[in-house]
Image 1 (tube, one colour):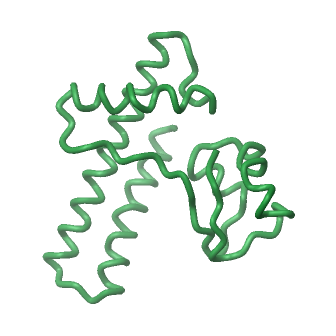
Image 2 (spheres, one colour):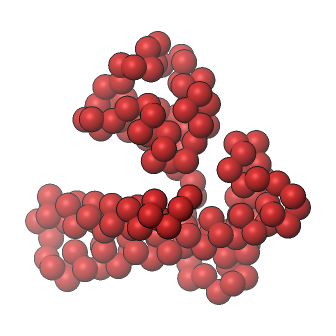
Length: 141
């Protein structure tokens, strides 16, 4: 994942936290706390991603390969904790709820998964990958 993608995710997480807080009418102090928590979660995820890439490189694997991702997840959490990362590393997202305007390709890019693998993981609930609807739950490979 490139730095531009990570910056976009950071902005998206902060924007989502602010929107969520506004939707439920919380105070600005609570909004700031939510934004801080989102920033911390993003920081933790970046540390986990870096640790996973480092561990995969150490053993000669590509961390983006779907079959490698699961094996490096635990190593990433341990490495992030050993590096002094605060709190637990957020678990990887396993499912995503389709929102208005989403496409299978966009979801695949957003979560860093292969489009064909995403389609294959959802053939039982998505007969036509060109037609997904808000509210549908997709499994990530």
